[in-house]
Structure formats: C-alpha cells, structure tokens
Image 1 (cartoon, rainbow, N blue to C red):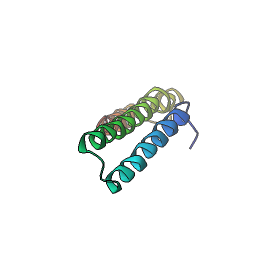
Image 2: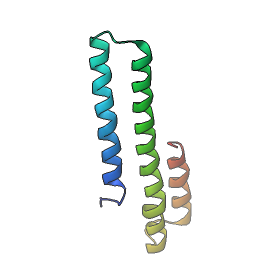
Image 3: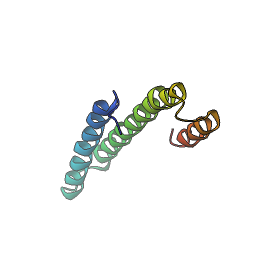
Length: 89
C-alpha cells in the first residue's frame, strides 16, 4: 500500500484527537466539570470525523481514480467499492 498525500494530515488529526482524549481521561480522574469534559469530547469527535473524511475523500480522489485509469478495477468493482466506502462518510 502506498502512502497517500493526505496520510500525514490524517495522522496529525488523529494525534490531536489522542491528545484531547488523554486530557479527557485526566479531567475525569480529577473530577473536573461536565461542561469542560463535554467540550473536550466534542473536540475528539470532530478530530476523528475530519480524519475519516480526509481519508475517504483521498481514497476516492486518488485510489479509485487511479484504479479506473489503470484498469485495475472494472467499472462494476469501482462502483461497488465506492458504495462500500460511502458507508463511512
């Protein structure tokens, strides 16, 4: 598998989510306020959602397109993979 252009961005987003998640665990252990914890949980959700979106879009824009151009996948297989992929959006 080759590294796609967005993989460094996806990794950065996931590391950001990891940092937020670590701080949420600390906040819970320190019995911080629910509002602060909820805000951090939202930040984790957004970071993961944005990472997923970037990864899926990159796959559509590069991997599927390349497979079609190179003839690696038939049109039916490409459509099937695209449909499968859209479940994750």
